[in-house]
Image (cartoon, rainbow, N blue to C red):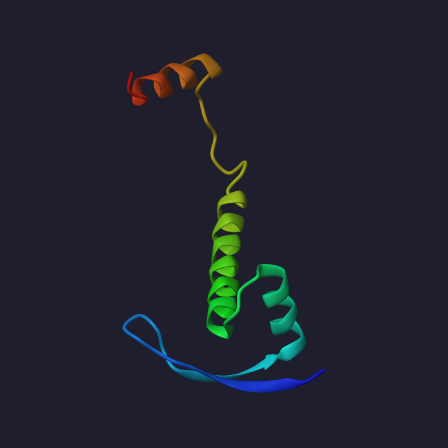
Length: 84
């Protein structure tokens, strides 16, 4: 397993950093995604990580709130929110 360092350029919402990345994972991620640049692969991986953690936190709420709506009441309420 080879490890290399990469410098990532920065702009307004980005930062420059040196990281140690497993080249086998970077190469496989690039092949699976079709992305060509290290920056796009790393950005995509971080976005996916954040998305999954947010989704998990929402799913962890399942069963923690009691809803007192019947299916009919819920559908009626939803129908009011949807424009004709």
